Each structure stands twice: as C-alpha cells, then as structure tokens.
Length: 355
Image: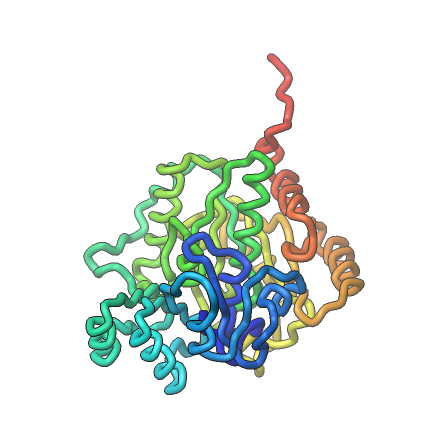
C-alpha cells in the first residue's frame, strides 16, 4: 500500500483505515520512506500489528513471502489527483505485475498510458470511485420508510475526522454484543476495506445521491435483516465544501446520529481559514435539518494526551447532556451503551415481562 509522505496523516486516511481494518485484502506492507523500518500499527495507534513500513516499491517487492498481488494507492488528497511522482510509481507497479486499486477522482482505465500498461502486463486497474452508468443510478423513491430497523448515521464536524473508523468499530461492537449490525459505506476507503453495501457518494451526480444512499440501506436490510444499520458519514453538514451529509440524512433518514469531533482541531482540514464548528452548533444544525436526534459524541484524539481525552469526555458529556466516548482509545462497550441508552429495546439481555 502506497502512502508516501502521508502515513498517519490526514491525507493518508485511506492507508490508515486499511491498516486498522480490512476484510478484502491482506496488507503486507506500507510504502512511506519517512517511517521505513517501523511497524505500521505502532506508528498509527501505538500498537504493533506486524505490517512493515518500507521505503519504496522495490523494497516491498523484495519482502519475503508469497508474491504480492496488489498495489493500493493509500492517499486521499483533497483534489483527488495524481502527482507526477505518484503516477510514475503506480506505472512501475503495473509493470511489476501488480494489480492497481485506487480511489482517486480520475479513472485510470480511461488513461491510455495506464490502460496500455495494464494490458501489456496482464493486470487490472480498479477505479473504486467510478460511479455506475447513468441509467443504473436511482432516484429517491421513499422506500426507506419500509425499512423497520434502527438506522444510525455517524456524522462529523469536519472531513477526515474518523467517521468511518468510528462507524466500523460501532458495527463490530454491536455485533459482539448480540445486536445484528451492518455498515453502509459512503466513501472509497470503506469499499476498499470490503464494504458490501454503499457507494463513493461524492462521485455520484447530486440528483441521485439521496436515492443511492436510500437504495444501499434498503438493500442492506433486505439481504441481512439486521437490528441496526450504521451509515458512514462524509464531510460535515456545516461544511461549505463537502455537502454529502445532506444526502446521507435525506436518503437514509436515520432515527439517530452519532457525532465525531476533534477537540484539538482549530480549523477545517484543507481549509485553514475556516474555524471548526463546535459540537453544540453541529448538533443544533443536524437536528434542525433532519427529523433525527444526536445520541452521542465520539472524539478523535489527535494531538491529545490521555488526561486530556478523559477530561474532554467528561466536559462534553456535561455540556451536551449525551454520552461521550473515544472509539479508538475507549472500550467498544461504551459505543454499545450509547446506542442502548437511546434504543433500550435493542438489548438482547432485556427481559420482557409476560402480559
């Protein structure tokens, strides 16, 4: 997985996510010369996971073990475009016999140079962000009203703030607790991780966005009959540049929202002239925009020490009057408690008195 210069940083969020959780691929190495020789899990979360970080594609190909099969572009730049250096490395990967997976806004199967290289070396390019043909896209239909299970959207106060990670950990925690939960992914990283339902929402024409979210939720319920469907958020409802949250709220019509916030972040990522909203202001906006309620706050602890996390959890809980946790540094059971406080009927251990 290629993440040169960006691993454990905001623009490395695709690589960060796949290192933390991936069902579709077995990650064998991360390429980033800054951290070469270190363990990816240790660099990212302080816990080793056995994935080495190497300096180059050549170093990755020289690792012991079975031959590598995939080259994943793990960077998510705001513009969604390739640098010259990245382009050269990706072409070298194709020429080395590796299939290429990426989530950029450009479609490399339509690039004559990349397409020719893939054909010559018998490999495939997966343009994860490519939307379905126009005739296959779905408008909002109202079918969401027929989905009887609880729907929880994980939204945030900014982009690249940990919504997908929290949504993934929430689904895992609910399933461990005996509450059947399914994730609907709305970004390329979730799809690369192995998401069975969803789409790269920001690649869909806006007219169809609500309908595509609705259709994914309807399909997830029809196939799996879960107790809870968790919908991964994108951007922030208040964000002037990333408006996907509007389609998520309209399309999935969640009965509840969990909000993700980074207390130490002063400005919107990639927009340093725009101050971060407060959790309270974002909650007011969400509950005014949609017929839903925010049932909990989860923290992104970037640049925070342990004592600061503990203090922030306590202070936000008092200020907002809702449960607060940190999905990565605190037990998953706290996320389950957050959900059960809002929906006690979901608790498998709940005893119903006979009539």
